[in-house]
Amino acid sequence: HSYADMKQLLEEMGDAAPSMLLFLKHVECIEIYDWGEDEAQPRLVRRSTVLSNERLRARRKFMLKASLKPIPQPVDYLMTIASNRFDDMGLTSPDVNEKWIVCNQYGGGNASRMSSSSDHSHMKLVPWAGVAAQLPDTDSSAPAVATTGAAYCFLPLPVATGLPVHVNGYFELSSNRRDVWWGNDMAGEGRARAEWNESIV
Image (cartoon, rainbow, N blue to C red; front, top):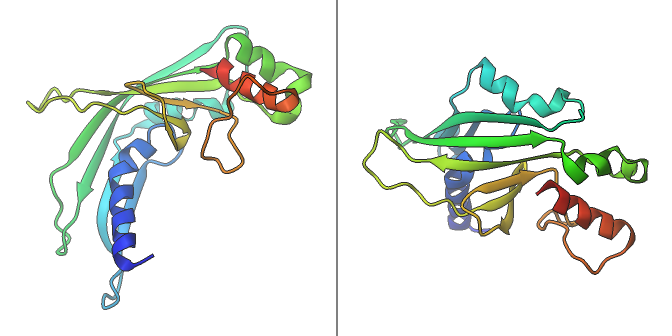
């Protein structure tokens, strides 16, 4: 890649950073640095941060300690993600805040049955899925930003859902981790993987 290509990739990553934080359990901040060949140290150029507190941290990490129960366990929360740009002098632009509602569920229906079945124990299935919808900024007169829904397996996948929300799940993915395993014309484990993905959405 050329220098210009790398700059463009970093710019695209900076734009995507807020949405990358939506379904992660521990990461609260993504920073991007530029280290010029004549500079003594890298320079911060972009930062996106979850405005967090202990309650939000606990709810984001809920799945890590949860145990499957007979009834589904909803885990919903509001989160604000603040993003900044920094110029060559290290001065920051005003915060751009994105407000999201994230609704998750642990267990339920066929997903619970499949994850508990000895037939699928080798697949290590976790019945966890959720959606995230961006809320309008009530402090601004700007129109709400339309969300182009994407599929996530904790981080965004290059898969559009056609929905106005992002959809996260413990999906079974293709070997290159770029596609959700899908299809009705399969047998054996391939069919089980496709059935699993249907079950958690």
